Length: 267
Image (cartoon, rainbow, N blue to C red; front, side, top):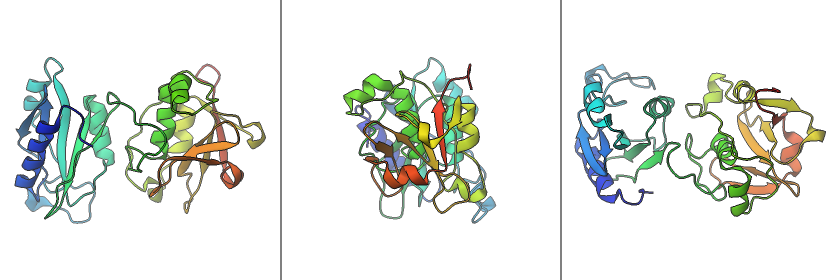
């Protein structure tokens, strides 16, 4: 969805992406206007097929630091924009790291030979999407994003979204950049990071609204997280499904770990 007020800027960004295809385009939206930038990443002749860390212009982008600094002065950058020729339409770990480093929203424009998609935008300064009915998108609206956003919103805002019984005022959990299917590389995104964020393990019998459960879904690593709500319901988000409430039932019984936020003083 194109953010309100930026329709013309993103139309120009999409046209730029088409001109540069099959290379990645890049640019900045500054005070509502799109600034096309030169991609100074490695030459396409250095492309490494199948290497997701390939740093050529077919697979990545680099904006000249001097150009970025010119427009960053005064804090007028609205978005960093780049294209993903032939996908994917969601951010990579490197994209997420870049967004955190710049501390401004980023946008991806995915396109192929025929179609140019609308931008996928993310970053903490953007409005938080409603927690129910989200379309799944790795790194933007996935199961960790749902957990993190519920803690960011807090009990009053969640109540306005018909999520009742949440025990916490807003709590900011850190974002953790991740590639899709990170668990297939034997990464531990959840256990180590939730403990780092001030959570502790609890017994299933003690679980209460606001607690987190972790599961292994076709994985040796915990790769799915959800939240316990009141009235025996959970809130979670699975790929190819909208985020939703469901009876705890089998999800609670099959959870491998339960966690509770206790903060850093008591963790």
